[in-house]
Image 1: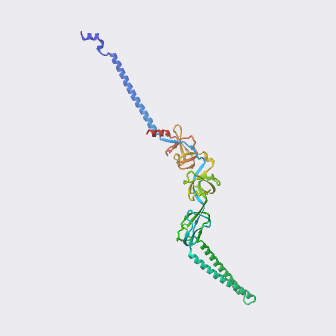
Image 2 (image 1 turned 90 degrees about the horizontal axis):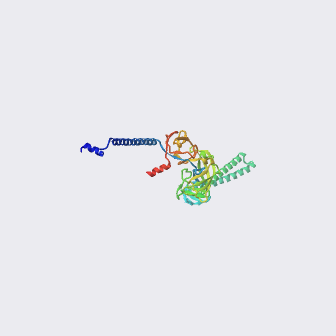
Image 3 (image 1 turned 90 degrees about the vertical axis):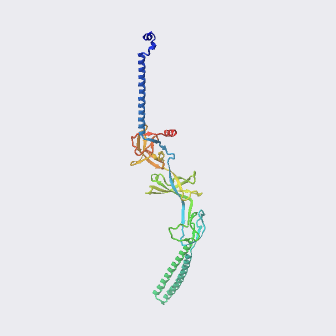
Length: 400
């Protein structure tokens, strides 16, 4: 049997026909086109994603904050300085040496109680000499008085002239004036001698003592340290500088609350008694005085206190923002408000009170506004920004 005859008898042995080859070719071409299409689509998608990422990266990321109602409402907190109700620096009015001191710092003293005694031997000697001069002047006065009386009697008998009688009367008047001057000198030296005994001018507490036994005391030295300081602390005065914007809301009769760092959790009540009614050109504030009872001596002279005033109700609607959200420019303080589409609007605001970390805004914003925190100086109205919410920030931190 020939080869041709075998092929005719067994068609399967002759291999694939042309129809099958055509189908395989078409399938391979479709598969190649599909692979190319998937690759092109993937590359286009990656390009678009990259373009979108680049566009998003070009937008500045900002953090927004929401205005909050002032938790304390209309409370104005200012620093104050506590001073004694009365305070006296005790200095010597005469030169001498400290013989002894009778009161020390922290001692409670009453009015007139001796604090120290000085030795002043030169004053004692001057007083003795002045007393002797006074006795001499008195003796001369008596002699002049006797002489004038006798000459007046002799004038009645025409034994002397009127001129001589007038001379004796004039001499008596001069002797009286000399006696009075000598007596005044004696009283002056006695008063000076009395200054060797230093006494408390009022009831109070000795808050300082520089007197040392044997130390020389020179009167009239303005730069010398006082020997004692006595302070009356049954009441205290508190001095506060109130900003001009609030000076009209703080009036005599208003009450305030004091807090001191050494008494955490404790507060003291004070009443405003007077105001300077003048604005200090350097600080732009008005000095006011408050008084507070101090029965237990807890309030110490010279202490620092925080004073809380209840100011006008008009400040109660103010909103607070972080101080970092305020932009300061030529037009005054402004804030950057972000709309729902990410557009920025720069609006001016009015600051009612600046507390450093936070500021109280009276006009310009609402509680629903979204404010950019720490805005860049170059931000302008119409700029588009990308808002980074607090939740996103936390998620990114957690992912890292």
